[in-house]
Length: 234
Ligand code: 6PG
Image 1 (cartoon, helix red, strand yellow):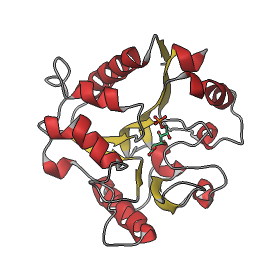
Image 2 (image 1 turned 135 degrees about the vertical axis):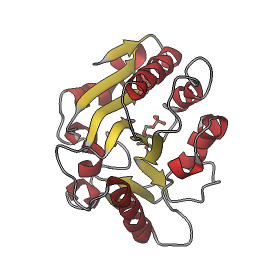
Image 3 (image 1 turned 180 degrees about the horizontal axis):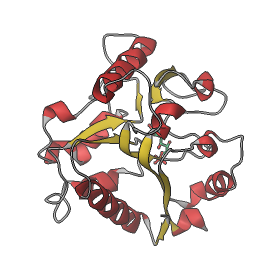
Image 4 (image 1 turned 30 degrees about the horizontal axis):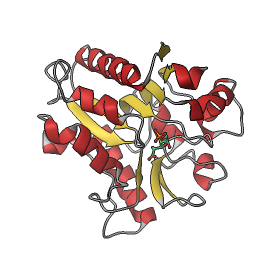
C-alpha cells in the first residue's frame, strides 16, 4: 500500500509504524533487509524509541543489509554503523540477530560470497524458492541515478540472476556489496523509502517503469510499497 507523507519526519514515522505493525503481526523468526543511505535513518531512530520500541519483537527479528559500502564497520560511510547508531545499539537486539556484511580482511568478491553463504545458512537452502521468501521485509532507497541497494546503472550485478550477493564498483563511488535482484525480490513486503525534491524526477521515471533505471526492475514476490514524501512525489 503506497503512502505520500507531508515531509521526511512524517515519512519516517509512517514507515516505522508500518514496520512494527507488520512484524508484530507475524509469528516466528523474522528477517529484515535494511537499506543504507540517509533517508531511512530517522525511521530506524523511531524504531528504537517509545512508543514503537516496546512493540517491535526484537528477539525474533534478524537484521540484514540490502547493500553495504566496502569499508570498515566503524567507517562513517558504513551502513552497519548508521543502523547501529540509529537503532541497533539502543535496542534489545540479540547480537546473533545482527548479520553484517563482512567488509574487512577479505576481498570484495569474497565478502559477497561470504554474505551469500550466511544468507543461505539462515534460509536453510542454496536456492531461493518462490513460495518461501528469504526476507519478511526489504527496505530500499532510490538514488538520483535510479540505483537501489547498490544496483547501479551499467554494472554487471544488474544481470546477476543466480548469485544472491555481488561486489560492485560503480563509477565515482567506493566499492560496495549488494544483494542481487533475486535476493531482494525474495520477500513478503518490499518498501521503497523516497524523500526530497531531488528525487522527484527519478521517482516519476521509476514509477513509469523506465527500463534504464535499476530500481524499475525490482519485482518483489510479495507486496511492493512506495512510502514517499510530498517533495519527492510532486
Ligand atoms: C546506500 C543505499 C543506497 C541508498 C540510495 C538513496 O548504501 O547508499 O543502499 O541505495 O538507498 O543511494 O540514498 P539516500 O537515502 O541517502 O538518498
